[in-house]
Image (spheres, rainbow, N blue to C red):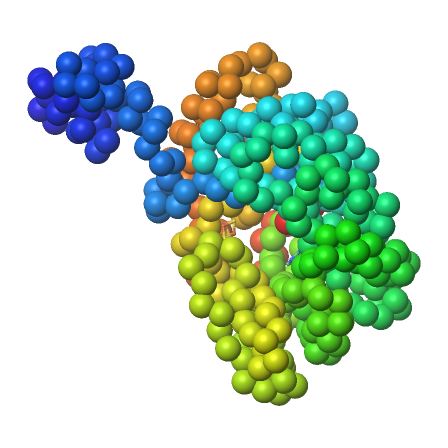
Length: 382
Ligand code: SAM
Ligand code: SF4
Ligand code: SF4
């Protein structure tokens, strides 16, 4: 690349080429009143190699859980994150502030079970106080929700999603190994009272709860909730996964069409994981078809684990350590530069790549999960 002499030309060329920018010595504002390379790069929207912005951040506030769902935590023993590594609320809030500068405007608190961390309302209050998040949401299994719904609302939480895979207590016990179905329903009742409208997430597994698609839809309608049916994914932790157990989007739609009639697509220009549909009576529901119809091309989501590792894809096998620089006393600007650099290099499309694989068995073997808990879905946050 030829050296560029005119400063304004270098400033413009810098948008397209770091080589050029590195050879140009520019002042913050040049003689023509144009901003310098640094200013331009900082103000350029942060996008990855596929042009995807960084907007959604999922915060896994704890890797612990009070259930053992068969599609997420089917094992008897787990390796947990050392407690001293788990970020304090102030540390999480500081990192979120840096992510906001990088473009994040939506945060979802998740886990593990986020409500096992009793200080979650205080975290919501801190996040809400930034005044810069368009959306602060939480995904929970609902067991502790009846005691947390009001404090969360008062702290500034915008939305709640509760996971509900079955309406049958015996099945709940078999699916999650804990007899807490009544507590979940009570949690949903409280959340409705406090938040009005809520969302429900149901993972559909063949031979386990695939006969409850219509009953779950009826429950959602009766409770003014928008339900999302989720395809069983072969993420880390799903050690019992097989393609035979996946009930795909098409099949879910067929079951619902037989029960309710013609289903319409709700046309939306959105990066949300759920594709939304409408029943003839106007009820809107979603399907998260990550397994049969991945949506990586528009994915603006990333995940921060409770101990401060940042994953740019649910299927990524490596994450960027942000706890290290944070605790070593590095500045926000330095941490921001690490985030920017990593996001600009992002080429992940994990679910699409999995779909391209011919022999599809469990994604991460048990032994690897035992050695590195970060590979688990419950650690990086669903
Ligand atoms: N414990 C909370 C809960 O269950 O709602 C939040 C964390 S959980 C990991 C978040 C979501 O991930 C839940 O809705 C759960 O159903 C979903 N999930 C976990 N493992 C999954 C899998 N193998 N396939 C599809 N969804 C899964
Ligand atoms: Fe179930 Fe959520 Fe716990 Fe996973 S993290 S075992 S999905 S309750
Ligand atoms: Fe995004 Fe990765 Fe999920 Fe694809 S697999 S939608 S890139 S998180």
